[in-house]
Picture 1 (cartoon, helix red, strand yellow):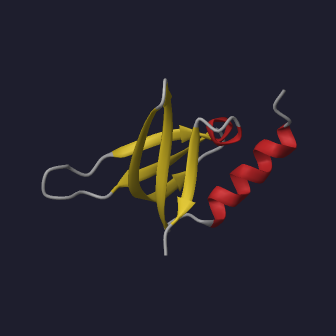
Picture 2 (cartoon, rainbow, N blue to C red):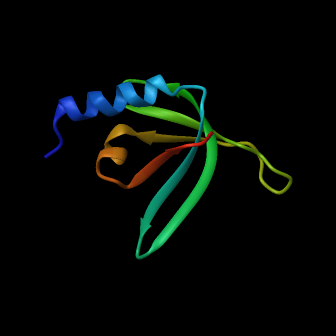
Picture 3 (cartoon, rainbow, N blue to C red):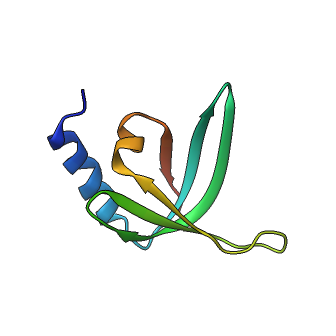
Length: 81
């Protein structure tokens, strides 16, 4: 069971890194993992937004993730330097 205190820890950690570049690894199941890089643009009470970095073949997109996804390890955030 997910504890509210754990969600608050993740929420505070993500909020402290707002505006910083991160790599997002998404576990899609059946050994399928998607990776993308972006910037944490906004945080809300239940979700946070990551704006992906556009390249020549990919447009800029904004993806939303929940804090419980981080707790259940459906997504993994890796800080970039």
